[in-house]
Image (cartoon, rainbow, N blue to C red):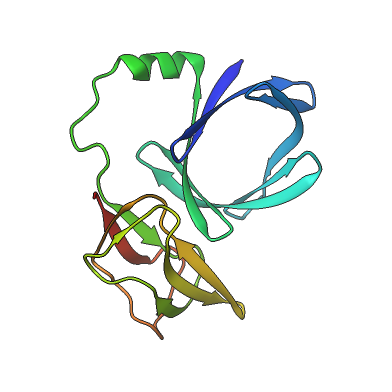
Length: 167
């Protein structure tokens, strides 16, 4: 079976080959295990272990946190991809994106202002958790709308920090 894995705006073709996956024609030994009782996945690619935080569903798939970046991830099989390609595209499909706290913590710094246009990957908010500062970055380009927190404020996991609107 072939899957099409889209991370943000990049799509990879993935197939299973025994104890490995073939990603865009390259065979990579890999395992993917969900951690029981935690919202995370442990991915081992070619011997390197990576922990991915799950931040719930988005309209098109999952929101996955890796190294302070929130990624939109969609996995489709061949049939689903074919059906989706035939469906009409709704107007305004981008829409606003909420940046949520991936863990409880203290807002240290807000690096943007309301109305500011930012590029994908731009630093937005610095959140301190367990004595470590985590820079949360823009998952896509957009305009900062509705900053909902202030420096020095304590937030819970899942709290909306700010919203990005379409450019």
